[in-house]
Length: 374
Image (tube, rainbow, N blue to C red; front, side, top):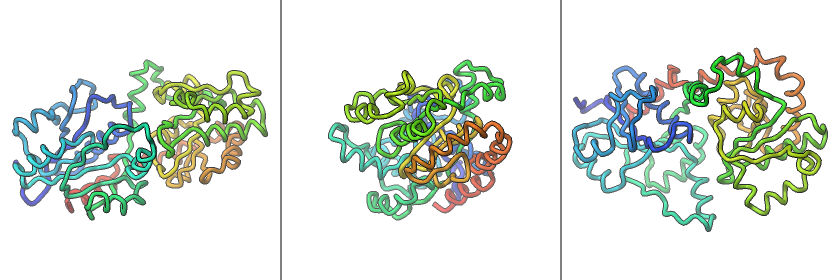
């Protein structure tokens, strides 16, 4: 039953052809749905594309297929949030005309500004931009992309751009224990991770998150303290080796010239598998992309996280901007003291997990206000 003056029934689009561990967007969508379902009087459904599987993550009673919703017109919502996909302009306008009470918004989980810059400069990018839909009643973006709001207002001719709370939960990191068939004894698992070895998880797709600075942090430490780090593995690094410039940079380093088989590049691998197999000192660098699930997963496993995200500067081991020298100094401390201070480290990190939790009353209230004020 649709309520005219109050948003009660809500749907979020999700593309189930992607695995939940394949990218952060899938997890974001589920966290958002869970958070909205915590709001008294609101029901959140998923409009899905792909195949609905029995995975204990999604309630099938709160799922409607894309075809069933758009073709059969058996359902009506007060609010539809385009997240995992949008239906295209033609179907969007049809939906608006047949459900005139429905509000439509888009939530952006990526950094649209830096993506637009990257793809504009990349001559190999041949695809057309994704089809945008409009008009929209509102656009939501993450707090670490607030600097993009003037750009988004101009690009979409929409003044109604709002910041939506960032969410994270531990359900997916716990799920990896089962999917990867790793020992599910949490404390035992953590104790066996080698924090004297470095793993880098940057996607190396655009300039916002690359492995260059993390590798140079390891190089700086090696120059001052040779052979104390056991190894360095770069996830999502295979493509870098196909670029002539990157191997040339690496060829001048001590970690390449003086350490046999020390630095290795790999295809994308699951986070839990990687830190267990290759090492749990996680070194990161970002440009205009300050929140990332890798940070929270690392802290959740009590791993030493060396990062330059000012938003979480009080957690892990923070260095400013591209200061590889300061970052390398953290490595010496980590090797000597991290395990001795693990209880204090874990206790502090719990505040961060609570801050981003879909069950946090502040996040629930903030989303309730966002929705009711559309």
